[in-house]
Image (tube, rainbow, N blue to C red; front, top):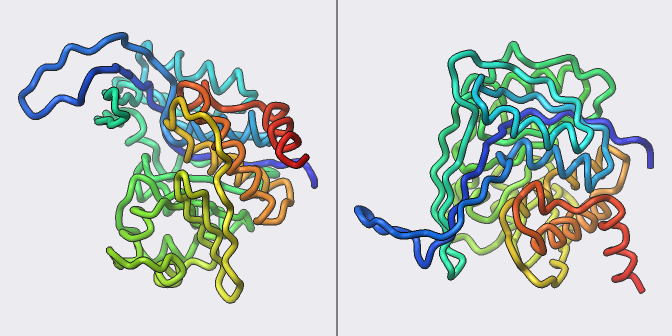
Length: 301
């Protein structure tokens, strides 16, 4: 496989995480325990995963505010070796998320997008030698559409993680090479709520290649006119599942950019995602490439 070069266009949020006995009901005040701050946001999580676990040369287009949080979001991108194209939004706060995690694992999340909502079509840098563009839906939909159009015109493959779930225009779906969704997001796009057959739902979306992440059941790769490929999950002792889906997306795209076959990319992405569940935090839990290769080698024996 060759060198992987890719561009990630997406969000960065500072996650404020507090653990408590239970998630508060409306009007209820709950006394939590320790507060922890983690760099997050789907875009930044996926960029870090692509660089650290996927071994890719990654550039990231991201919008940050002019507040103190910006430095805390920049540092992990630098540490992962990511070339960040940062759009500074004067007078705006950087993105943040407020997360309460209950002892039973249930959580509630409120996101304040801040600067992420100001990432505009004209901010897209030149693709250079990037072969793949990876995006999510925590930046304006108009920008996602514009970037996808520009990538298609430049011969760059477009990978979209359609999260958080929302309806998408046909024009955008027609510009996507690979769509990555979980079961809820797939049902929302397919308009087939309650439909058990994943292949039928994938066909209904109208994208030639769809990857469905299934949590503890692994993942499914569906391609039109080809048999689906099931990738089982790797069993691990789970500590924190936050960002595991983002790790999957980043590593999967990095593998494709390096020239891997989709089934190999699925295998590596599932392993990286499993490893991420064994540590706290989305970006802080992302394994290194060496850790991923050691994990795969141990299970190949």
